[in-house]
Image 1 (tube, rainbow, N blue to C red):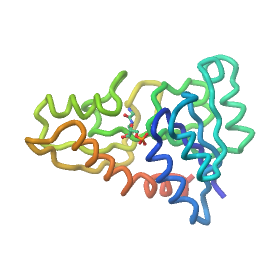
Image 2 (spheres, protein in one colour; image 1 turned 180 degrees about the horizontal axis):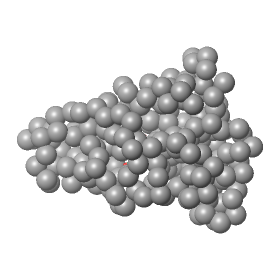
Image 3 (cartoon, protein in one colour; image 1 turned 90 degrees about the vertical axis):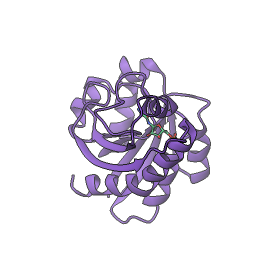
Length: 189
Ligand code: GAR
Protein backbone atom coordinates (compact mmCIF):
# COMPACT_ATOMS: atom_id res chain seq x y z
CA UNK A 1 0.00 0.00 0.00
CA UNK A 2 1.48 3.36 -1.07
CA UNK A 3 0.95 6.16 1.42
CA UNK A 4 -0.03 9.63 0.25
CA UNK A 5 0.18 12.89 2.24
CA UNK A 6 -1.83 15.88 1.05
CA UNK A 7 -0.62 19.42 1.78
CA UNK A 8 -3.24 22.17 1.59
CA UNK A 9 -3.57 25.75 2.84
CA UNK A 10 -7.19 26.69 2.22
CA UNK A 11 -10.61 25.33 1.34
CA UNK A 12 -9.36 21.89 0.40
CA UNK A 13 -11.96 20.95 -2.19
CA UNK A 14 -9.24 19.11 -4.12
CA UNK A 15 -8.03 17.44 -0.93
CA UNK A 16 -11.57 16.17 -0.29
CA UNK A 17 -11.93 14.93 -3.86
CA UNK A 18 -8.60 13.10 -3.63
CA UNK A 19 -9.43 11.54 -0.26
CA UNK A 20 -12.78 10.27 -1.58
CA UNK A 21 -11.15 8.87 -4.72
CA UNK A 22 -8.60 6.84 -2.74
CA UNK A 23 -11.15 5.52 -0.22
CA UNK A 24 -11.80 2.74 -2.72
CA UNK A 25 -8.29 2.21 -4.04
CA UNK A 26 -6.63 -1.07 -3.13
CA UNK A 27 -3.07 0.16 -3.75
CA UNK A 28 -2.92 3.69 -2.31
CA UNK A 29 -4.10 5.36 0.84
CA UNK A 30 -4.25 8.99 2.02
CA UNK A 31 -2.60 8.89 5.45
CA UNK A 32 -2.67 12.56 6.40
CA UNK A 33 -3.57 16.13 5.58
CA UNK A 34 -0.82 18.63 6.35
CA UNK A 35 -1.94 22.24 6.74
CA UNK A 36 -0.12 25.47 7.57
CA UNK A 37 -3.28 27.43 8.47
CA UNK A 38 -5.05 26.54 11.73
CA UNK A 39 -8.38 27.99 10.48
CA UNK A 40 -8.33 26.46 6.98
CA UNK A 41 -11.53 24.71 5.91
CA UNK A 42 -9.52 21.72 4.71
CA UNK A 43 -9.17 20.77 8.38
CA UNK A 44 -12.95 20.51 8.75
CA UNK A 45 -13.07 18.33 5.64
CA UNK A 46 -10.27 16.06 6.91
CA UNK A 47 -12.02 15.56 10.22
CA UNK A 48 -15.34 14.72 8.53
CA UNK A 49 -13.59 12.25 6.26
CA UNK A 50 -11.70 10.62 9.12
CA UNK A 51 -8.22 11.49 7.84
CA UNK A 52 -5.65 12.62 10.44
CA UNK A 53 -4.64 16.28 10.09
CA UNK A 54 -1.37 17.90 11.07
CA UNK A 55 -1.21 21.66 11.51
CA UNK A 56 2.26 23.12 11.38
CA UNK A 57 4.02 26.47 11.49
CA UNK A 58 7.05 27.88 9.68
CA UNK A 59 9.52 26.58 12.25
CA UNK A 60 8.11 23.03 11.98
CA UNK A 61 8.56 23.15 8.22
CA UNK A 62 11.78 25.12 7.71
CA UNK A 63 13.80 24.77 10.92
CA UNK A 64 13.07 21.94 13.38
CA UNK A 65 12.32 19.15 10.91
CA UNK A 66 9.01 18.38 12.66
CA UNK A 67 7.07 18.08 9.38
CA UNK A 68 9.79 15.93 7.85
CA UNK A 69 9.82 13.69 10.94
CA UNK A 70 6.04 13.27 10.77
CA UNK A 71 6.18 12.34 7.08
CA UNK A 72 8.79 9.70 7.83
CA UNK A 73 6.93 8.38 10.88
CA UNK A 74 3.83 7.90 8.72
CA UNK A 75 5.88 6.14 6.04
CA UNK A 76 4.74 8.56 3.36
CA UNK A 77 5.63 7.59 -0.23
CA UNK A 78 4.16 10.53 -2.13
CA UNK A 79 3.50 14.16 -1.17
CA UNK A 80 0.68 15.89 -3.04
CA UNK A 81 0.35 19.68 -2.92
CA UNK A 82 -3.30 20.60 -3.48
CA UNK A 83 -3.66 24.34 -2.99
CA UNK A 84 -0.60 24.58 -0.74
CA UNK A 85 1.08 27.97 -0.75
CA UNK A 86 4.47 27.60 0.94
CA UNK A 87 7.66 26.57 -0.83
CA UNK A 88 8.73 23.03 0.08
CA UNK A 89 12.14 23.09 1.82
CA UNK A 90 15.15 21.46 0.17
CA UNK A 91 15.60 18.79 2.85
CA UNK A 92 12.11 17.40 2.21
CA UNK A 93 12.66 17.52 -1.57
CA UNK A 94 15.93 15.63 -1.08
CA UNK A 95 14.21 12.99 1.07
CA UNK A 96 11.37 12.57 -1.46
CA UNK A 97 13.01 12.72 -4.90
CA UNK A 98 10.34 12.82 -7.64
CA UNK A 99 7.84 12.18 -4.89
CA UNK A 100 6.43 15.68 -4.43
CA UNK A 101 3.83 16.83 -6.97
CA UNK A 102 1.75 19.98 -7.27
CA UNK A 103 -1.29 21.14 -9.18
CA UNK A 104 -1.28 24.62 -10.67
CA UNK A 105 -4.50 26.21 -11.95
CA UNK A 106 -3.11 27.40 -15.31
CA UNK A 107 -0.99 26.17 -18.20
CA UNK A 108 2.58 26.47 -16.92
CA UNK A 109 5.08 27.94 -17.59
CA UNK A 110 2.68 30.85 -18.08
CA UNK A 111 1.06 32.37 -15.00
CA UNK A 112 3.23 30.61 -12.43
CA UNK A 113 5.73 31.78 -9.84
CA UNK A 114 5.67 33.31 -6.39
CA UNK A 115 2.35 34.87 -5.47
CA UNK A 116 0.50 33.20 -8.34
CA UNK A 117 -2.21 31.15 -6.70
CA UNK A 118 -5.96 30.75 -6.75
CA UNK A 119 -7.95 33.71 -8.01
CA UNK A 120 -4.84 35.77 -8.77
CA UNK A 121 -3.94 33.28 -11.48
CA UNK A 122 -7.36 33.43 -13.13
CA UNK A 123 -7.37 37.24 -12.96
CA UNK A 124 -3.97 37.34 -14.71
CA UNK A 125 -5.07 34.87 -17.41
CA UNK A 126 -8.13 37.00 -18.22
CA UNK A 127 -6.15 40.27 -18.12
CA UNK A 128 -3.67 38.80 -20.62
CA UNK A 129 -6.50 38.00 -23.06
CA UNK A 130 -5.70 34.28 -23.13
CA UNK A 131 -8.07 32.08 -25.12
CA UNK A 132 -7.19 28.97 -23.11
CA UNK A 133 -6.32 28.05 -19.56
CA UNK A 134 -6.32 24.79 -17.66
CA UNK A 135 -4.34 22.77 -15.14
CA UNK A 136 -0.75 21.59 -14.90
CA UNK A 137 0.33 18.79 -12.60
CA UNK A 138 4.10 18.86 -12.15
CA UNK A 139 6.95 17.63 -10.02
CA UNK A 140 8.07 20.10 -7.39
CA UNK A 141 11.61 21.44 -7.30
CA UNK A 142 13.19 24.25 -5.31
CA UNK A 143 11.54 26.99 -7.41
CA UNK A 144 7.85 27.92 -7.55
CA UNK A 145 5.88 26.13 -10.29
CA UNK A 146 9.05 25.11 -12.11
CA UNK A 147 9.42 21.29 -12.05
CA UNK A 148 8.78 18.95 -14.97
CA UNK A 149 5.17 18.72 -16.11
CA UNK A 150 3.36 15.39 -15.68
CA UNK A 151 -0.09 16.24 -17.01
CA UNK A 152 -2.04 19.12 -18.53
CA UNK A 153 -5.71 19.64 -19.35
CA UNK A 154 -7.10 22.65 -21.18
CA UNK A 155 -10.32 24.68 -21.00
CA UNK A 156 -11.45 27.65 -23.06
CA UNK A 157 -11.49 31.20 -21.73
CA UNK A 158 -14.62 32.96 -23.01
CA UNK A 159 -14.76 36.74 -23.55
CA UNK A 160 -17.26 37.06 -20.71
CA UNK A 161 -15.41 34.83 -18.24
CA UNK A 162 -14.72 36.33 -14.82
CA UNK A 163 -12.10 35.02 -12.36
CA UNK A 164 -14.96 33.16 -10.67
CA UNK A 165 -16.33 31.46 -13.78
CA UNK A 166 -12.84 30.57 -14.97
CA UNK A 167 -12.03 29.18 -11.51
CA UNK A 168 -15.11 26.96 -11.78
CA UNK A 169 -13.94 25.58 -15.14
CA UNK A 170 -10.44 24.96 -13.82
CA UNK A 171 -11.75 23.32 -10.65
CA UNK A 172 -13.86 20.99 -12.77
CA UNK A 173 -10.70 19.90 -14.63
CA UNK A 174 -8.89 19.43 -11.31
CA UNK A 175 -11.66 17.24 -9.89
CA UNK A 176 -11.87 15.19 -13.08
CA UNK A 177 -8.15 14.51 -13.52
CA UNK A 178 -5.97 15.13 -10.47
CA UNK A 179 -6.82 11.96 -8.48
CA UNK A 180 -6.16 9.75 -11.50
CA UNK A 181 -2.83 11.48 -12.19
CA UNK A 182 -1.84 10.98 -8.54
CA UNK A 183 -2.77 7.31 -8.84
CA UNK A 184 -0.60 6.87 -11.91
CA UNK A 185 2.40 8.50 -10.20
CA UNK A 186 1.87 6.48 -7.00
CA UNK A 187 1.38 3.19 -8.84
CA UNK A 188 4.68 3.73 -10.66
CA UNK A 189 6.80 4.49 -7.59
C1 GAR B 1 -6.69 24.97 -6.74
O1 GAR B 1 -7.31 25.54 -7.87
C2 GAR B 1 -5.21 24.76 -7.00
O2 GAR B 1 -4.92 24.48 -8.35
C3 GAR B 1 -4.65 26.10 -6.62
O3 GAR B 1 -5.36 26.47 -5.47
C4 GAR B 1 -6.70 25.95 -5.57
C5 GAR B 1 -7.05 25.30 -4.25
O4 GAR B 1 -8.42 25.00 -4.20
N1 GAR B 1 -3.25 26.03 -6.37
C6 GAR B 1 -2.44 27.05 -6.61
O5 GAR B 1 -2.84 28.13 -7.02
C7 GAR B 1 -0.96 26.79 -6.33
N2 GAR B 1 -0.14 27.80 -6.92
P1 GAR B 1 -8.97 24.00 -3.10
O6 GAR B 1 -8.38 24.44 -1.75
O7 GAR B 1 -10.45 24.16 -3.12
O8 GAR B 1 -8.52 22.63 -3.48
